[in-house]
Image (cartoon, rainbow, N blue to C red; front, side, top):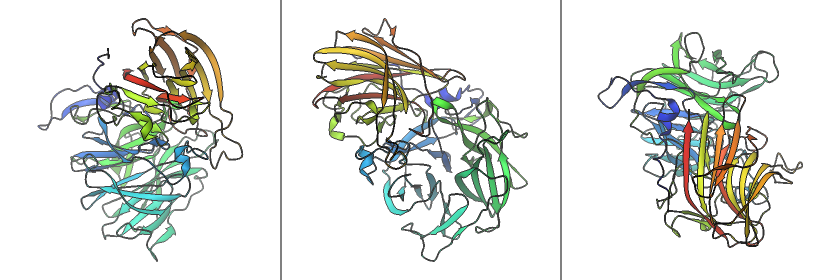
Length: 543
């Protein structure tokens, strides 16, 4: 019998630690507090806008499909995924894990804008053929995104519509390129120049461009990082000019450590309907990934200064919240009772759509084997959700009766370094194995095609399984100095047994370049034809 699971996680409310207090608005708003990180999950490279009384934010998900998640909020605290810009990418067979992979590549830092009644998104995959995409819709929540054009590659760009009808890309490290007004391509004979030059203090990474115009002035924000310089932390800098082509002057607008995780940098600012300003800037937090920090933005002498008056960042802030609006969050439980896959889920690389189903056994997600392989990293149709800090866990219920000889199915704390629970079918016998798995790439093609070669798998414990139903649980502790995943199994969902060893999760830009994900998988090592049925995914969060 299917377990009756708890309601889906109200991620924005729970993640923010919202404590609603006295009603202060007639439209459902209440004065309350939120807690940073405002989303304690992997939401890197945030770009956001306000349209009327709602906020829209887009983030990077690289090799996960569908991609370019668009999140909506009424208060910058409670967020809900409302769409993805694209379902798959097909520029190269590597998106299908053919002749390589796109781990850590694919869709990178995107720019979302609103202009003349339409939303626009630009992103440029960090892989061949290095061509950007421009998509549009009139409503990200209700209307699919459609492709406008393919344009040249612009790294970490900011799409910008100027008041005079001209359109630009700010990108790279202070570069500017003009586009055609209809966004069909770059403008022949249009502006193309470097508008910002590094000063003597900018000797490292300077990227993550975001641009806006306020009171007639142009502002370009970027993250600044210098590796190996004692006492230097990542910071956010801003360049300002009266003319779009410059000259630009510079100011450091945020340089503050937060909770012993180092500096905070890369993101954007937005105003509220009441005229206040806020910044959403991410911070690296190890195994959970890169998390957004919400902070006030004060305009001082014409500069958008981030954080508190002294430049610090607080753990909690007060603001008007809308806890009943867009509160379904970006992760959550699923009983697979819908005829559509929840927006919480993303596939690892492009899915093989005839190898999964919500209809063949209603109320279950059926995962058929889609590839013969010897490792999890090359498996097709691995399905993922984000983990959540500081502590979170998830349980999956699996019906194994459809497995055949050589099949491997299970649950993983999935990343370039993964902790994995695998049920292995050998003949007619099933064994549960806990392993620590690491992806390795062919050293010749590591920077080009990311071809998987000689991945390692270290077995920690195995247990014989003599039934077709099993429950697997992974608990993740991302508190400082921990970052441990712990693994359990149960045969009745009542008595739980720990298996294997605690696994240290980590963020490795050389492999996946993202935070750890919960992942459910099923692949064949001998022949195709088997399947597993996922009864439910039950997500829990601990403060």
